Length: 438
Ligand SMILES: Nc1ncnc2c1ncn2[C@@H]1O[C@H](COP(=O)(O)OP(=O)(O)O)[C@@H](O)[C@H]1O
Ligand SMILES: [Mg+2]
Image (cartoon, rainbow, N blue to C red; front, side, top):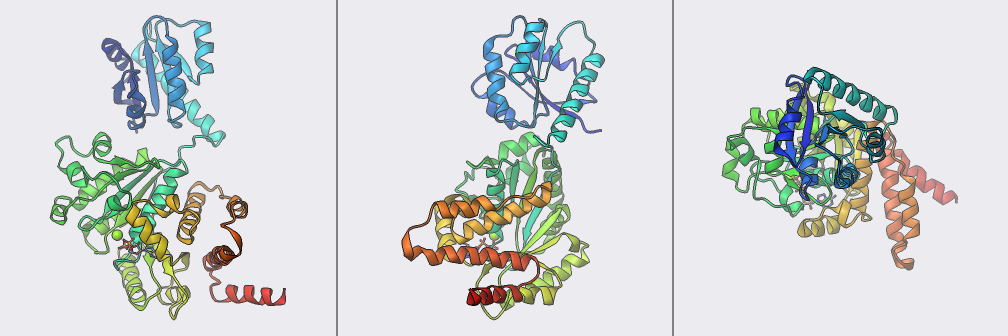
């Protein structure tokens, strides 16, 4: 049985131990302890607890209630319980007003009774949030971005998807598995002090605490575990460690995004096996077409075929069309991202993904819609695209000159819809003839 992760809060060290002793070891895992100080909130967020036990001896000061109120604005998936030796009706009412789910006794209770009651409260709380669809604990989805060809835009798409998922309030980890040439850190202007190599070499082993210690926060809320700074360090990371890292991350994130290398090595194969979905990123050129077929066949032999989704990136009208991939590889096109070199280059140079720094560019808007599609499929809740269209109208980019640009974006969206529904050939023509009629 999976243990329930608990964080115990108290400024009093003896009280922390007392509360810990009320929890049956076989049912609860202590993710950590904290005081109510300024640093506590960030610390607690990174411990991903299911339950936060605020423990107080004697009268509960207002500062504890204020702390809980502030904490609950950031940790939507944690339940806060107050443990005190001073229970009164007034206290219970006041606690409820601050979002505390339960006030539990510190004394005159056995560990069995305490643990049982805490489990019951948590089960009720989880049921409540499932029913109301709020704070719903969605199963983790591991999504890999792969192609057997370099430079097709795997990292660009992986980074932007991860950042936008985080921006939409999801708990997301981005793992750079291009161990020799990983450039996720550069694309995000992230601190590269630590990498996956530090994690696998640490004496403490691969634990969620160490994953937190060696990963970095991005301003979007995304966590990133970087590739090593130099290529020769890559050999310290072996496939079983990668599998273990992903498994340990699962309970703590809604999405784990893997940016993979274009080499079919042990790490790539293990990563593919750990994925729920593998996005294959290709361009409309003959080398991509050839490589797509080859990579598809290998992944088919490895029994990964059902996970594959095909993304065409850097799309421009040319001799090779998205449907050529469908014909040759036998896989529907999942999504098409237009060529937008200007945005792509400026974003890499700034270390800011397009979905944040240039969300209205054709690259930024396309990648946002891709992410919306990913979220909709995972949660089963469709994302409305309408406000986006309205926004465009509300903020016209200025006068006559810019209007062709506007048209370009809507044409691209049209193309995506048609490609997604497998009508790549006919739809653009249909639109043209409609216009001609009008
Ligand atoms: N849709 C796009 N339009 C234009 N350039 C792009 C697009 N997507 C990615 N790029 C550029 O292509 C290059 C390779 O992208 P990258 O994501 O590093 O590929 P990979 O990870 O597959 O090697 C980068 O310079 C990137 O900015
Ligand atoms: Mg890359």
